[in-house]
Length: 215
Figure: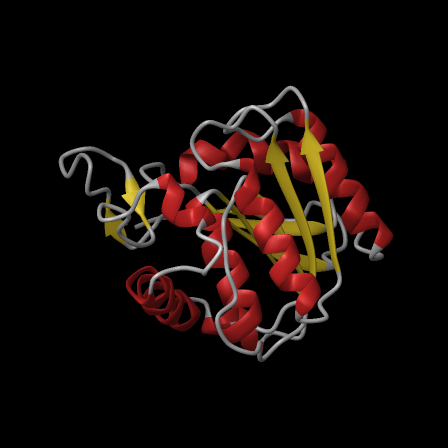
């Protein structure tokens, strides 16, 4: 496993951990991290590899944060919430990751958690239950709240309207759960994006950070 680190070129005001999606790896988020830091040089960005090899291709470079082999996209928008099996998979992964990044929890610098797709689900769970942070940025993700949160960071959610991997409804359900649990949450939908992070999405996320004095 590798952690790509993009050190803040100017005065470091925060650290952002960006979790990749299912079957990808940290390298897949390099361009996003570089763009983000170019626009906001006061943030150090850490892009880690998932701790499990991708179950879809064990011989390749792909990684994952938890298994999704037993689930379908419709499971992500079940109005009754996730199955206990999926929630346990996210919880187990979050315990592993929070131990891995314990040094960030103990550091006085503000922490921001971000993720794409599966990584967004992990970022949400970490921010609510394992890693106290200032902000959570969820890109094209999914997440449902089953128990009362321990921490209450501010959330920003993004989704592509044309996403055919993780349904747009997944973001709406995440937003609803966060709102119902009295968390501060904003959302933005890119009408032209599919299951990807668009430049417009990065710009909107950067604007959100600026509105929270992280610029």
